[in-house]
Image 1 (tube, helix red, strand yellow):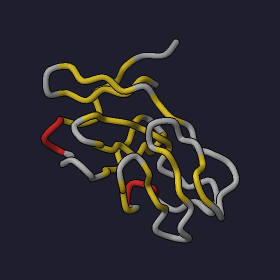
Image 2 (image 1 turned 90 degrees about the vertical axis):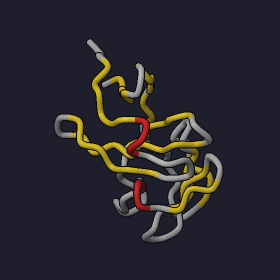
Image 3 (image 1 turned 90 degrees about the horizontal axis):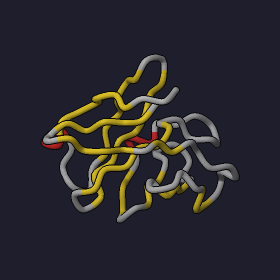
Length: 102
């Protein structure tokens, strides 16, 4: 059964930035898009680059390794060389705690 797990504080991630968080054995990329938080798998589906270290432009993150682009709100692939999207996770904010549903 899925549950929400606290992964960060709102002040940990500035607008337009991303951060890798560990949840159990998963590494999740957490992003702040204009004060709203989104979470996707941190591993690019092309060759495993860390999406949390990519450039975030609006809701699009670009993988730092080969330039694949993903929608951080859905995990959908937006540009090659990746052809498959990544898993997205539900996020909620409780006070200043950011929680991801795992």
